[in-house]
Length: 462
Image (tube, rainbow, N blue to C red):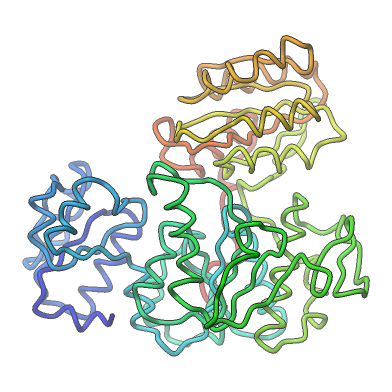
C-alpha cells in the first residue's frame, strides 16, 4: 500500500507515541491536505493541537462507533487490533494497519532483513547491522529496536541493506503490505504478549505470519525450535541455524558445519542464547552472498545493548545487572543461566499478563539461585508458586512493595557478595512507562548514572 493511495479515503491515526508521530509526519509529508483524525490520550491532545494543522481533528475517545467511521486506521504498535472496539470497527468495514505496513508499501524494491523472535531479536538485529557495516556495507538499523521505520521514510542516501527488528505487534503488518521481505529471521518462539494477542495460539500465528503470509524470499530458522521445524514454507528458500550442517555451537565453540571457528566465551554477547543467535546472524550474512568469515573479526567491537543483561558495575562486593528488557519467565531463566556459578539474587515480577511460571519454578528447583525477590502486580502469584520450594531451603524468598525495597532485600540476602539481577520476566506497565524507565530507575537506585546505560548504539543509517 502506497501512502498516495489514501487520497480520498477517511483516515485516522490511533496513538500519539513516537510511532504515532512518525506516522503523522509521513502522511502529512505525502498528503498535506488529507483530512486526518487523531485518537489520543487527554494528556497528548494539547501537544497535537499545538501543530495547528487545520486538516487534523483530535479526539480523546476511541470507541467502536468513532473508529467505525473510517476506511483506514493507522494504529501504533502497542494498540491491539483484537480489542473489542477495534473488532467491532473491523466488522463495520474499517481496516487497521501499522506504520510498518506504510513503510514497506513505500519501499517495495529495497533489500530488507527482518529479524524477530521472542528473545534476542534486538541484539541479533544490532549485531547483524554491525557486522554488515564492518564489511563496508551501508546499512540501516531500525524498527522495534527504538527507531520507527517511518522516521526513515526518505533518507538522503539509501542504504544497501535494511536491518529491521520486528515485534509480534508488527510482523503481520509486513504481510499486509504485500511486499515480500528479502530475508526473515525467526530466532525462537515462547509464550509472550498474551494480553495483546489474546491467546498463545494467536501470538504464534501473528509471529509466524512474517513467514507464512509475508512469504520471504529467504527464511532463516532455528532448527532447535519445535514450532519451526515442521513449518511448510513453499515460497521461501529455507536456511537453518543451530544445526550441524550450518552455523551452530558445540559448548561455547562456534562451528560452521564440522569446522570449529573460535571459542565464543569471551565475546561481548551476554548469555548463551545470544551466542546461539550469532549463528542466525552469520546464516543471514551468507544467505545474502557475503563471506561471513570476512566480518567475524568485528565481533569484539560489538557494543551490547542496554537493559539486556547489562552489567552496570560493582559496588561493595556486589555486581548489579540490568536485564529490564526481560518480559517472560523464559528470559529470566536465560539470565540466571549466565550466573550459574555465582551467588545471585534475582528480582522478578511486574505487569501480570497471565503467563505460566511453572517452568521457571521447575528450573530453579533444579538449579536454585541464592534468593528470589518478587514484586509488581504478579509478584504475589509468583511468590505463592515458589513458596513451597523456599520452604524446602532451596533458596531464600522475599516479597517487595517496589524496586527500591526489592534491591535492599536482594542485597541483604547475599550478605554483601554476589549478583543482584533485575530480570523481571514481566512487562513494566503500571509501575513504569516502559522497560527503559524501569532499567534507568534500577541504575539510579544502585548508584549508577542512568544516562550512561540507556543509549542504543548503531540506530539509523551508517
